[in-house]
Amino acid sequence: MILLFVHLVGFALLLGGAIAQFLSGTFRISPAVLWGSIIQLVSGIALSAPLRGGGDHEPDPIKLGVKLVIAVMIFIMVFIPRKREAVNKGHYIGIITLTLVNAAVAVFWR
Image (cartoon, rainbow, N blue to C red):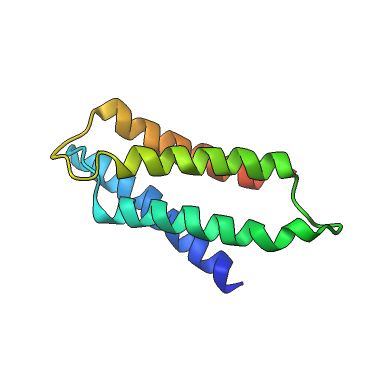
């Protein structure tokens, strides 16, 4: 449960930080967005690791793979330009969109 809480905090940092930065009109990677992406990636891997033993409630491995690919894409999109003064508006929209898509995969893929 604590790991799930940490994962949700990472999501809040990533999405909240990205939307706040987007609405400010300054498109740069804030520390909240960077740390949110790191927390999301690490806690997501940790959440999926114990589930590899089988059982009735194990998530679909394809779902986990899709979520991992999206999380890595978000991390790369955040980590590489983190020191730039500004990034492209479309780049920022991509970060927000992929974050929402990853959350949608988690919620709606059963």
